[in-house]
Image (spheres, rainbow, N blue to C red):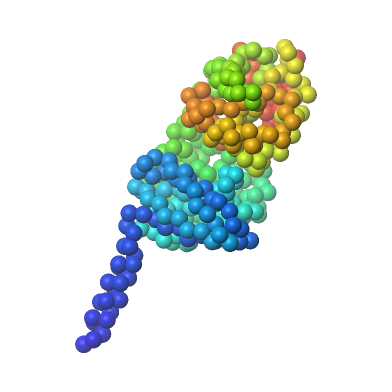
Length: 338
């Protein structure tokens, strides 16, 4: 007669444990090589987009947050280098393992979607990290073709597919995913962004863009002021900046009045972060910072799918090329010089 109460007590304890935090999610993480460092987590919540900071001590960290519906949680180091992405929902306890050397190698347990998503990425981590944008896109397109009803297909396209390299192709791939596999609460932002990129936004002359020079003075980029203008729109941090700088240095060799204007516009969250990012650039081209970042009206209407992003315009301010590939932008700019 004591067995039933014992089993019932165990069941109640299990339920109580499972429902111990129905209004929040908890992440317990581990980072390879056990670093002690600050981490930044970004996700959508009832309060809007949350950008939170927590600390890893000897590779271990914990975080608790709250969402209305399942949300993508992006985890960065303090320099905004991506370490991994997961999906989280209130009531969940999620364990995460991250590798600073390869964000595709992240794994997660505790959310079924996050588990399947990270399992696919981590199984191909080295291949994805070294792949060209077109090769990476092909891998993702292959998964989508085989799993059109899987929400992981939508997550892969949203986060790892290079939409900037082929906006029309991204739009077709996105449309091939079943509607129920790309719920608006999780994918609405990407859908809107993709629609802007695949629209005529960059087919019209680009409006002047206000920015701050390194001297602290405000200026206005007028794409019509030069026969050809190469605009690099970049973010904070040094990750991937070497390839951007290599292109800008090559482009600057062709810079000159009545020939080519080259400008690097940063979307860093503040001027301190911006100056830290560019202080060692030894730039011979124009550099500036845009207040408001990606949400600034002059930038928002461009519908940028990613950062860094490169736009080449002609003397009428019309877009010649819009791409995430630095080398492609440089080729387009040089090809249109007299």
